[in-house]
Length: 505
Image (cartoon, rainbow, N blue to C red):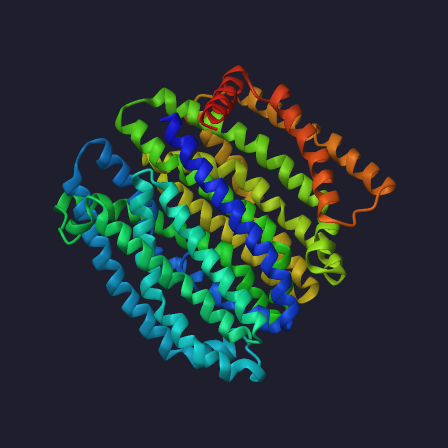
């Protein structure tokens, strides 16, 4: 099991880092080649997608359900149930996509002019490409099925490699289009080409898999009931999660303008990426917990929670703090001086992935165990409702600051309750856990003091200097957490991982 987790988590991390690097390179190139509103319309296109956008509301919890049940049925050697599972979700998404596409096309003029505030200067040209945006919905939903299936087989390397290859194609295409004088409409078409390439690659891989030619089998009634119950439990929470993640862009483009959307996209890029990486990493935990549950190994799931949470804290908290402390320097080097004034927005957004650390890992294990799934749907709605209300009340007064601070307003309410649930279920002493968190936060004084000294005595004029500064802040903090927060079991786990990685390399 540990080998699967290491392999899958490594695939997720390498994929995320590589795509992040390409994305960071592309953003200033796009901003330098077009207006802020044109860039905002590219962001709007991504907003209207399934995997990374608002249409993920209609995913209905199918991908995590597929991942969980494919892993479980594989552990129990029940390939017929996997084939039936695939058959019903393909049929379901075909019908659902047809309905969504019909509605979006019917309302297209109203949505673009009245809801998303696309200016008259760009409205006609964006309307022409909107048909292709909507038509890609079919392929996007099918890609969700493929990803859930392969990840249920612990083939995260496959799904992440597909993502990387398709993104490289998009990145290369975008650079060629910009160098030959093409505009934002052609870039939007390049964005849509990712869905096409992904679908083609997944289809080929899927047909070669053992269940690929049996996907039309219909599942037994009891299996349909189990799937429906699990998906419905996830669905409400999935809606809340997508609304929470995508509502800031909706609020910005509706109450402000697509030009503000460009600013928000830049300052939210790193915080959102960190949250996505954490989510991908935790998705590795779902099939692992499900497989351990099928084998009745409760003690290993407890270890999985405690070790996984502390390792997440050890690696991500120092990263988030370093980004916050160096946000002005990062924005100056990355997108230019004009964005430095928005560094405070990035710093407030970094609070979101920090708080998410305390709920995402534990909830992933609960998903794998099929335990208290419904309660997290309720938590999701609390988080979204509080955050949305906060933003709506203040957006006319403080604009983007209302959007960024609203992101963690709801999380601050739910996190203490969630942590209490996890500690109670896994029988972890509250006092010891609280002391560990207090020590972790106290250790932040070290990188904070170091950042002040660096800024007073040196200037940051290149990415190399920024990288050295980051290392000088990050590594001491990680070491402090390793020695002062991690217990014997967690340290042994880290040592084991390092030895296996070094042995393989």
